[in-house]
Image (cartoon, rainbow, N blue to C red; front, side, top):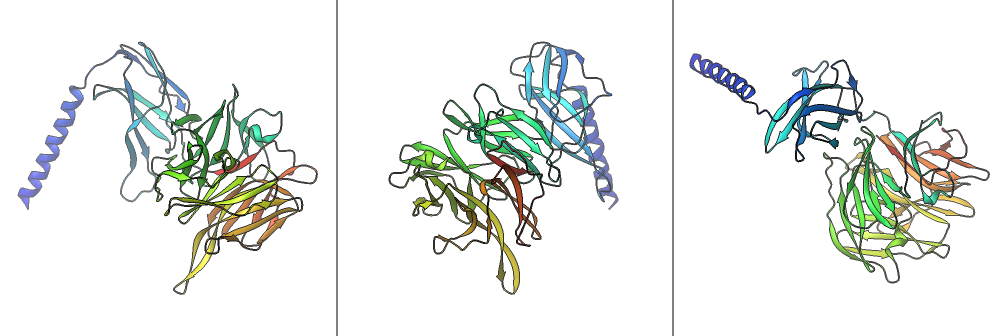
Length: 425
């Protein structure tokens, strides 16, 4: 036993020596380093400029993020190593990056990486940038909004209706079909400009954009923890592509290279609303352009798409909720998709029956005309539909409690300029 202890101690000493040796032999790529004032605590997304002599065009910045853990039984510190920094500007004498988000308040060491080797430049302090516990509500203004209000993303404070501008678009750009994977603190949607429709992620922690060059995007389909994009292949075919707006997101759905569109349908007919992932199906809505909409079902297992009989309606909006299912004497919940059918009489909320390929009787109705629906699911006891509607006199956001089966106007009625709303955290 003494020999084992002696061996372990010798190993620790050698490791410490190697660590000190590595420190002493750290390469020197730049000189005259000037880090930000150590008293500054950066907010995620703030620009951090580091000055030095000798930066090169191909230099990268890597981050070592260390966060104190409070009351953890085993560790007093958590860390993320080798995190790629978001670089916004680079010259021979300075480099500017965004303070990292999505982590607790941290001490972040900044490393310059060149040719596979790294040199420490110094450390910065960064504030908490984690996803909030509660879902946040956002409104999107785009060309579908029928208003002169600037194209933008705005935060709507739940309960008070207070509005804060998050992002505004210029040069004819706009954002639509916004969805969120819970916990990602990212809005994933389609950014359009001049007919081009690319997948874009807006990082709500760091306030910057990331783009995915996947070709012409028709719409996005979502559930609680997955996103699938519908891409245009040619005038008669589309494809599915699994989209992850968060590195830790796992998807159970396959990418399908080619699915034939129903006869006579163009891909742009599917672009009005986001779709829903339910089991092995995608529920989409097709605008037929003649005052009717058709439910469209993509069977991921059979790589096929079916359009059902058109409905006389002004809108057909897919949504999802969790429904109870009894299994071996215990109650479980499964995701179920449905459609909000909007007519001159108001809106009916109907679940989709995957067996009969038809809509069930309405489980809720509204005299107003739904424009956009966002599902709020905190747990099995908290399920709500946030519904952006055009009322008899103005636009409002109402909340339908699925378990209590009642409407609750939690937000102040008013003139909201949005074409869609989305809940995100």
